[in-house]
Length: 427
Ligand SMILES: *Cc1c(COP(=O)(O)O)cnc(C)c1O
Image 1: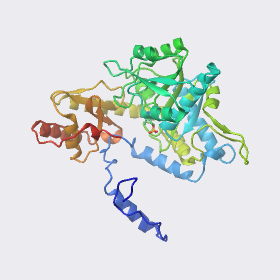
Image 2: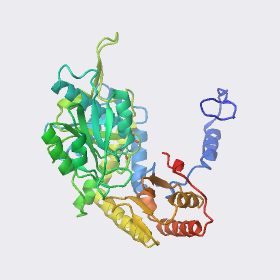
Image 3: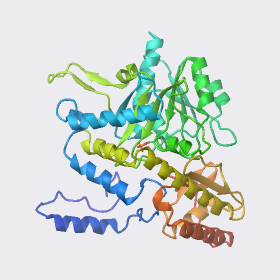
Image 4: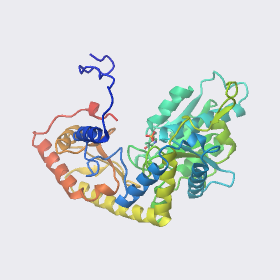
């Protein structure tokens, strides 16, 4: 038995080698047989996609730079350096950063958040000389903040104080204010939060940050690259960027609603001095000085090229068009869900991330029963509800999904559903 996995399968032997591509491809494709049909819109998370053309452009650009290592962009791969520079510039202007703003291209939201928190910690140490090391540092974050902050807390060594929400599931700035003390290195707002898909009141949280003289990080990982285009289309959603003076850093994933190939994310700072705070420098190595602004060393050149190509292909007109389509689709899903007896949105969504529930049916059982129809079901447990992050491939299957949802609800109400439990809600 494999103690780590609990599996009784024998350990795979190191391969003899010599298998050709056709053999390998056939093997890999056969393994895909059990995967969720994400192209068919059956997964409400993990994969984000615009249309076939955007996908193909990202894929091709990625493979143009398949071997290049973005770690060597300054010395060896000026192509990567110039594309990365442009992608960061696009983000700085999209988020209204002042001239002294700067960004870092990372391999994911968790890395972007870790770098933001490290910079906040080092900034706090500068403000509190002599108290930095060993002090019980904390951040204040709404309960809806992403677990990547918990990971950063564990790695960097600070506590998280979770604050409550308003009835509309947005952060409650007064509750946040009550948790701030002299050891608070940062406060956090999401734009939007993952569980309920709504943007926190960053205007008010920014005012709190300015008053208390504390770093505010806005986690726009999931929706940051698309939300501004919802707003440009006239959708009434809260603003969240550097135009609010307390916002000191923003994380935003290209590989989610930026529709760029994985792994690609960004973190932006109001002040370029903070990029140095998030950087890691080692001076004692025999090979020489080693300095990176990312957590990882080697990273794929393809991710930078893919992001550059997708952003240039879509541009603001393309993103506005996608945002309009997503808004229309979301409204149609919401209308269909609300038609089910006793069903309601946990809160009205700002983008295309929805969370809905009912007080008169066991939502865990609905989720289990719905998975029996071949859907990967996104869930929340406070409150027990269903959750979907929707991109373009969720439109063609809308009627089918709603139909299966209605059927599953009816089955559970009739007492024939599969029993589910809070333990099903694991990501
Ligand atoms: C996905 C996500 C993250 C983490 O990003 P990864 O790319 O998965 O590391 C952080 N915050 C929010 C709100 C997210 O949705």
